[in-house]
Image (cartoon, rainbow, N blue to C red; front, side):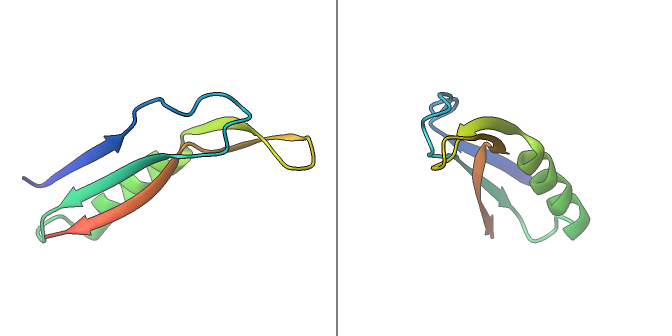
Length: 71
């Protein structure tokens, strides 16, 4: 295994009033280059959804709360 992404509760938080984020865990082995790890994390971060803010406005926010795991 070089790398894999574990997505917990896929698509579970889609309503704008739901302020929870989906959880993405990137698992990789020690041989994966740092630049490749950053590219995957950047791709996850660019995925956004509309979220209702406390002041009543809506804002595009990242879909994922990300965790990184190395073996």
